[in-house]
Amino acid sequence: MVVKTLKQIISEGIVRIEKIDKLYHFVTRERQKNEDKDRKVLEILRIKDDKILDLQRCIDDQAKEIGFLSNKYVFNILFYVFKTFITQTIAVDAAESACLEREVFLKVGLFVKFNPTGKQ
Image (cartoon, rainbow, N blue to C red; front, side):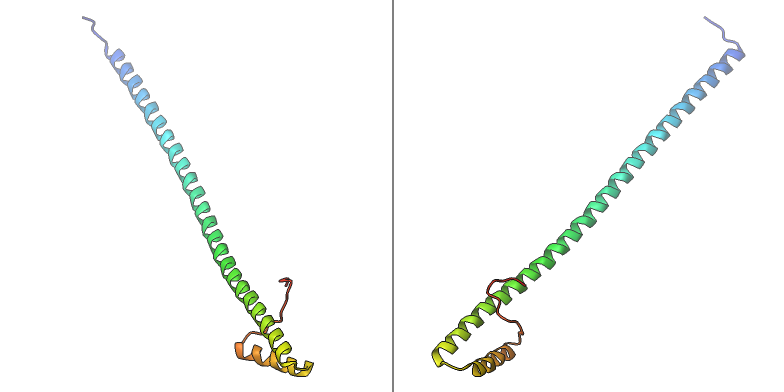
């Protein structure tokens, strides 16, 4: 049986306290590192979510534009066919043709000229 002196007991206690303190600081540092990593990951995910929302808005806008342009293109084709049919069937002169063209555009409510190439 070994009898320890008070000095030995105190020094062993101090060593234990130092080990516990080092362990506490290590755990605290690791927890802080993990929280920082989590924060960075959440920030990256937030940025990507914002980017996805922007791209979805862009796609929606482009889909609306495509719908508008396709409607405009179909209208132009139909109008061209109608105009050609009228001028060939009725054999109207240029003044009457222009008057009919204006009247059709006014009734439809679209002021677009036929563009057979589709270029703006």
